[in-house]
Image (tube, rainbow, N blue to C red; front, side, top):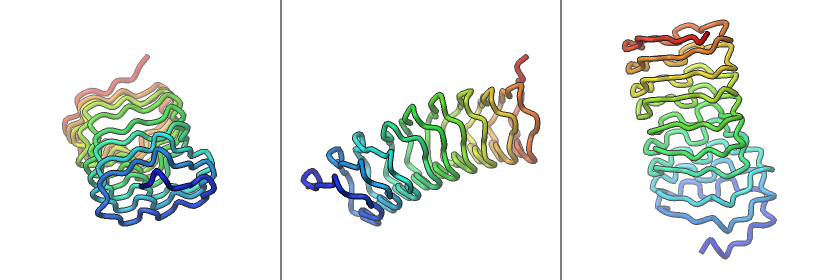
Length: 220
């Protein structure tokens, strides 16, 4: 029935599916979102939502997407809208069955805690990404064993990959100059790290409790 809803003049979509715990599937491919400025809490706590089609969402005018998918704990995959440049704080926080995210190529910023508590099985970030926020991918449940950051990333927040116990290999970006504190805190399965030659400082406890760490590579 959502296909018949006229949204072409809507500016605020915050909270519209807030706490719809009985919602399982939703096709919003006909939603017109060109004028929308607020999508915060839009699907907050839709904990039984398994599939969602946002392929035609336009987000160029959106200023607030905080908590948009918070605690959508049945989602296993997500294709984010083309043209999305900023993923805000806590965007898909606590989506603990989320295994796959298709990131748009225009993405430049991932906010604090955006994917904390997810179960991502691999992480492919787009070229052009500049910044990863604090605790952005911190999760006991993440199963990705290898992460390679695009060379465009120049800022990483503390605890960005903390508690990713399945992570074995991490290749940091060439543009990075500072490794933040607790970046890989308690990544107990981490075996190999590649650090770019521009790194000037390593924060406290950046690799604390990385008990399996065997190799640290610094390119010539």
